Length: 283
Image (cartoon, rainbow, N blue to C red; front, top):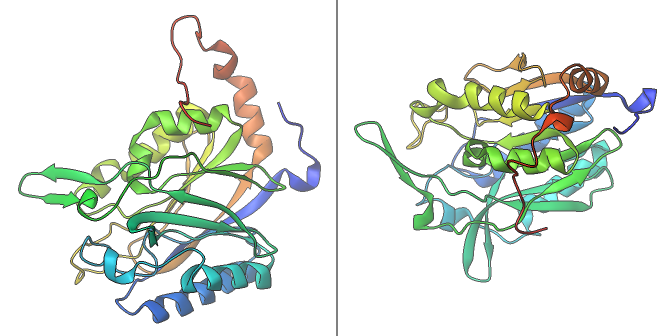
């Protein structure tokens, strides 16, 4: 168990539920403005939503894609340094060597790029009469785990559909993560059914905090996001939850509480490694 100094045992997390438009420059300007607002409210880590700089859809990914570093990530780097905070850059369509990825770039308080998470599990689903979507029509999957360290705790990253895969969260917990952040854009079919359920499941199974940052809902968009950006405690409690509109959600993350829960219900020392294991195939 990592012992935490009193000053680092808690921190404020902010989730920006951005209303995404079809104008990239407008999305970037408003995202940076909301990051500054979160900083003024005492946030030390902030996350943007999935696909924050462009509409969500396979037809939009090639049009809005950019390199990393590029214009969008440069602006995130600058605002992270200006506000001296950790910025989890939701996700953007990334172009690299002729391939497109759904990618989250994270910047530290000095503006340095800490990690780049490419969505591992592509959103290919077919619910007859409700929703069909194939990210794999244009996107390629990532192939690596993504964690970064802060003075508060280690953070693990996933994007949207990644949250459905319990093994990813388990590996992050094995690697010492105490907070998992999933920028995501669930829809009006999967959102009401599974959005909160999955977050609470990942949180309780791994005794970690789980946060999700969604775009705000736009009923006129071709893909309508569920919204409801959320923070869940290791006990499975919903600590903060947005509605459907543009807003900033705040939660004070108490790592002492996390340590207490792990002490009271010590599942990590009780796992039957003689019977089963979840194992990472790559570092």
